[in-house]
Image: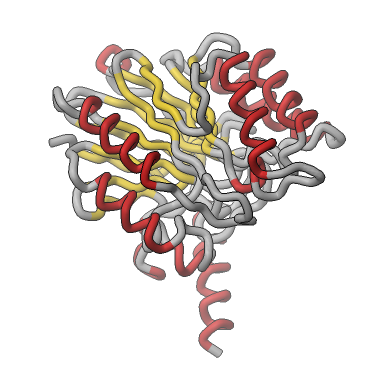
Length: 319
């Protein structure tokens, strides 16, 4: 009975969210934006299926028309469905053709290294690293890396296990890397952005939306403890296939796609390719992130159809 009631509330909440009107939004003070970033996740490209590539192309074209030009495009994992080299190449071909000007911050997800067919996890990681280097995403010999965009640091994390399917293990060397990069990135008070396909356990509705979707237990705790050592840290994830959810979902279920806990702001992006659960469910959605001197603003956008959503704007003050 409880499960049925939860499903009914979820459906009604989604229905209310989807009939909220679009708005023709443009930044009030574009000259004050210090960093402008378009963020999507879970594009799930399959080289055999053209529709997904067309959807990504349309979204990237919309990003390129932003009134305030994007400095970067973040894709927070699940670039592909099955992690095969042909699909990874198809993803990058779309990026190269339709987003040639903005910097790219690309993270690997479970479908890129865990759902691989006829390959090992390590083989999938290695050719992703090759693509990172070839397309100047990062010059790295590891699946995790950091990158500067206009003086702001983006730190990309990834699973290191040899047998995970959906979950994520982050070992001590990567934790130490995260710690060192955050120390440098936040030394002068600037915000730092950590991109990890998997959310930290207990954030953004993780146990309700998708129980086993977070970073694995001890690794989640270590990542969270490291994030909490520094000020103005943001963790941006995907993976849960949750919609854009705000006040209505917060009141009904106690979580939101943007929330701050113990000084760290957690942002969970909707899946771009598939229908989402909770909140606004449509595909083709993501978040526009605007960094100002004293705050960071996240605005829900359906890039696929070039529309902003009213009442789904989140402002996070910087300290």
